[in-house]
Length: 223
Image (cartoon, rainbow, N blue to C red; front, side, top):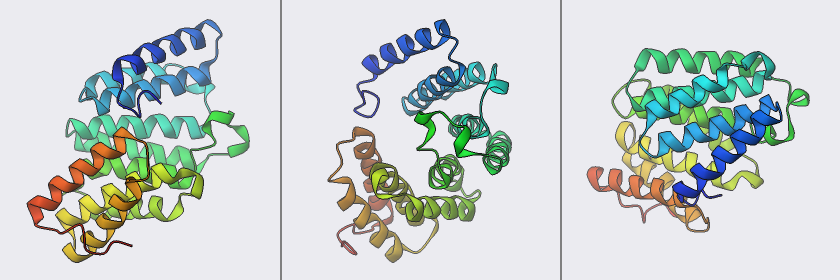
């Protein structure tokens, strides 16, 4: 919650405490989730190399994790690599994530991994590819995955669906039809207005930046 509210100092302290507790308890699966969350926070805060270090720590005990958990870690790695424009490493990590997710068995997962379904996987990998797509690489694949996430998220994952929709709108503004982008973006902004998420708000700010550059009116197409 602190991370989502962008209260990063508190989030860092709580992740560190959670990490210590997980290691003392030999809770390797919980350790992996904490490290993945720490990595995502570092990536979000503009520290992708620090995020990669967290992911590498998590992979030290990957043989004790489920396929779903390994897919989660590979998507996190992909997102970090994308921020430093390591194109080949992004594609490799996404490929590994897809391979692991194809072997996933939800019955094997701890309860805190229930959120990581096909829609979440599509959204996370789509977010990683987004950073390449806006620079002209793998735009179609990024858009397909983000669209899958938007269509696949259930009602209890409104924040995740909205954030993927925001990214899809931004990507469409750069690589697709501007009228379509206006429709997706206006709906995304409307949905985001009901969320209490600073991360979603920051994504809306990025979307508005793309809209100004491409002269897209986000008032058009609102539901």
